[in-house]
Image (cartoon, rainbow, N blue to C red; front, side):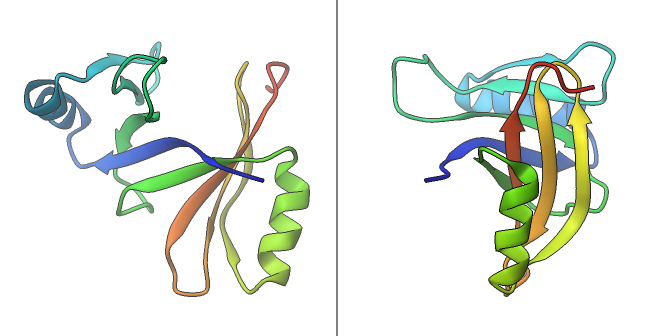
Length: 120
C-alpha cells in the first residue's frame, strides 16, 4: 500500500524559505548539489515523520506530498482510471528514481515516486 514518503514545499525564494524553516523548526536543510532543490531533514530517522524538499515555485503552487509506489507507470494507470489526472509526466531523478505529479478529482496535487538508483 503506497505511503507518503516525502513532501515538497514550492517557494518563490527557496533560500529564504530554507532559512525560515531552519529558524522556526530547527530543520536541517542543504542544497542538493547544483540543483535548484533543497533537501529537508525534519528529525531523526528513528522518530516518526518524513523528510522533504524545498523547490522553486513553478506549476506546483502548494505543498505536495509524494507517495512511494512500486511502479510509476502502473500507479499512473490506476490514478487515471480512478478519475485523477497527470499534471507532469514521469521524469528521472538521477540515482534516486522516477517521479510523476498527479491530481485527485478535486484538483489536489500529489507526487508518486518509484525508487530506482539506476534512473537517469
